[in-house]
Length: 148
Image (cartoon, rainbow, N blue to C red; front, side):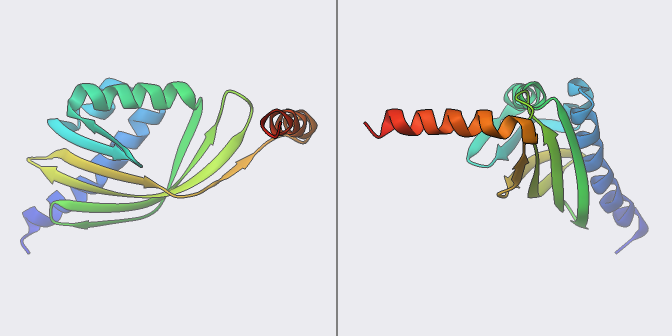
């Protein structure tokens, strides 16, 4: 492997990290300038094709989860493919906080992300102790309504 190719591999890992950092800080244009115009992104069962759909996904993600932080566990680069294992820490408008582990595979073409396959694994949600009774009572009310 020549030195230029090694630099490209390191560059791909850097681009992946740059996307997440920009996205979570709310810099949508900067985050998605690193995607090809005809890129494809999958987030679990949802597919987003083209830059416009991918940007809309990013805006919705940021809108629905006020605080987002990605903790990278591992990133492997092999040529034009990069695999990243991570945990996302998040907060929701209802006060819940959570952690979601995930794994993503990225494919690059001409220095841009061509494909991003992001799989979020089951995670954990946390609520404040004072809110537990409120959430349990809402759950019991809903359960009573559906059991009739």
